[in-house]
Length: 235
Image 1 (tube, rainbow, N blue to C red):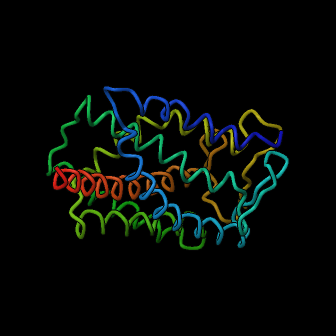
Image 2: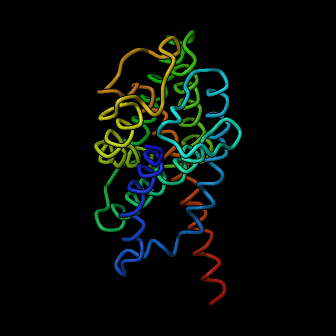
């Protein structure tokens, strides 16, 4: 069905969107901060997506798409970089507001350094396979920049939230990679992958998604604080 991917995008975001207007949440007040972050981060990931599509690392089954393309990408794939981050940032916002998770500075540092070492070694080990190599390399660099340059101290907390979101991620990405469908919506070149899948999802997708969420959270927090400061000064 041509609306399949579009419906996946829609159902990924609709519940979070509606609850954004709940008076105890009021996430809608931060829509501007979210969309600004989504545009910045999404632009980078869209370029990455176009590169890999042109290179044949992955491609799309247009039996499940509207057929509207921007460059090499179907419109649904571009919406993916808005819908998925929206749900994740909204969840982080709610958990941080109603169920603050204590994460000591020391714990965060150990987690980040250990992650940098593991992902860096993974990038070296899979240097001949473009998807894991690029994913692990950029995630290693991202963690180093976020923690040591931009002084981010919530990376461990973000990882916990990402783990909470994994069931939803598995459902969404599972459908995209073929779970419950006659054919996958997104197809991968096995020569460019590690070869290990969770259900139908290449393991690389989980790290790709984590990097996407980290940068969305960084810019969202940055823009949200900026907007709050501007509102305070106006008063």
